[in-house]
Image 1 (cartoon, rainbow, N blue to C red):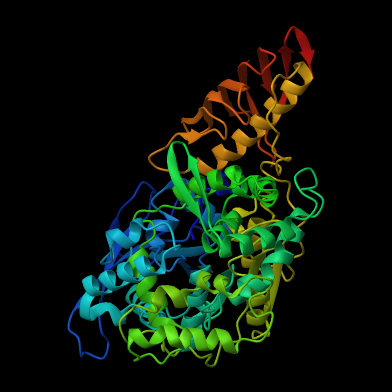
Image 2 (image 1 turned 180 degrees about the vertical axis):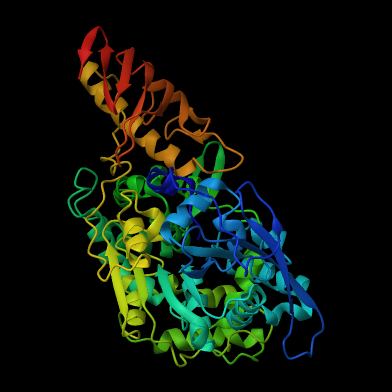
Amino acid sequence: MGPRGYRRLAALALVCGASLTAAVGAAAQGTPCGRTPGLLCSTVVVPLDRSGAVPGTVALHVEEFPAAGQPQGAIFLIAGGPGQGSAHTFDLGSPNSAAIFRYLFPGYTLVAYDDRGTGDSGLLNCPALQAATSVSDPNVEDQLVRACASSIGATAPFYGTADHAADLDAVRAALGFDTVALYGVSYGTKLALAYASAYPTHVSRIVLDSVLPTNFPDPFSSDVLRAMPATLRAFCATACKAATPDFAGDVVAVANALGAKPAHGIVHGKKDTLGGVDFLSVVVDADLSPGLAAELPAAVHAARLGNFAPLLRLHVLDTQASSFTAPDLSAALFAATDCRDGPFPWAPGSDPASRPASISSALAALPAGSLGPFGKWASQLGNATLCEAWPAPAGGVNLAAGPLPNVPVLALSGGFDMRTPTASAQSVIAQFPQGQLLVVPGVGHSVALADPSGCALQAVHNWMSGAAAIGQCPRSPFLVAPLAAFPKPVKHAGPQATFAIVDKAVREAEASWLIESDVSPPKPVPGLAGGTLTLVGSDGFRLSGYALVPGITVSGTIKLGERRTVALDFQGSLTVEGPAASKGLLQLVDSKLAGTLGGHAVP
């Protein structure tokens, strides 16, 4: 997945003074575009089917930002998904984004193009599949997948990673570069590795951020499931003690319970259902959302104790935050690429009707512990279930490791990355004699831009500038700290008890704002026990009768403060009301709450 807005906070602080004056070299071509001075856009036309059996072409949208100063070469920026167009995602037309990547890769011409089927390169769009937000009903998912493949038609087999790699080489040749550096993020690392294997003489160096090997993703997500408990334990360490004594144990217990019997509830007046696979998807999504990561320990522990309301609400918030338009992340291209690549437990040309039996046989043959502490139901987290209905061919693209180039390689892995576990980065970097691995504790997916301390960003910059060693990154402070356990309802709370509940409500609201801050268009966020949170501009939110427990409400406006630290600073004025509350006014200054409730100074 691509970067969310919060991940640009630390990066922008490092590069806000970077020069954007481009020195247009002989290789640069195209016409000026975007708001970044010197950015050039062009089109590279490639065959749809390089065998020639199926006619047609794809016009690839290409953006090139020539290097400033002494040229060091060119680097291709390769986005993830699959389904994200790299030009669209990295947004070199924005001066702020261009400055970030110029800082990451000093002296390099930056190249980003939209892969076939994404962005402005023949976008694939299956609206019904794009709008689907749940995998709780495999039959419905099968219908959506079949309909999507049918709408793509005879061209569906030509969106595999091997096709994307050939396109990358066509863009390289069209721009006149003999060798290029590669920067891949998530699925972009798989594409970078596939390109390096197929075209080793054209690669000068590689940066792999959140590594996906070419023989992944696992069709049952077994690697993700096995690594999840240890990843959760490392993330929480001592930070979640106020919420739970055992976050990983809570996740395992709740997941298996929901795998057997989904939970149902009402969130903001609408019915919501949460099954085991959807719950695991929420847990995985926390590696892209610090706000979700802050709320999950308390919500999951409450669910383990029988109160599913906080977790159902988080499911709704995560669904809103994870809904993308096709230009941002094409669900159709995701399916077309992953279902063409595999690997799957069936032959590529098999009849889709035979594949459920193949899946069942493969699951039965798995050694004990292959899915970690989760039941076989959890295998639906992988792509086998998604792609079982995809028409033949499904799977079977040859991405076997070829003669990888002996070039400098830097791999980044987040200690809290659950979708591409560190073991994958270790296995890949072992194949490169000049490889180095940087594991950043506490950081999730897409490390360089997700590390709010800027340490990972600095490490990439230094390595690209010729530093022999990359060093280590300490664990970064939380943007918002993990919440304490959710409070229980009360009939009437005195000043101190009211303050304690309101303080938790404010911390929870800060985390909820962080979850939803990039949702477009903005949507009101329901309070757990009533009221709403509404976004105000890009740096604040308004609470209207917001409540964690019935009868104690908070209203007022909160905005980001001026303190320049990793941990976000909030300030604002709040009114506390409700039949169970000691009423009064509170001020939030430097994220510290104080004031008067029931005529008494608090805290």
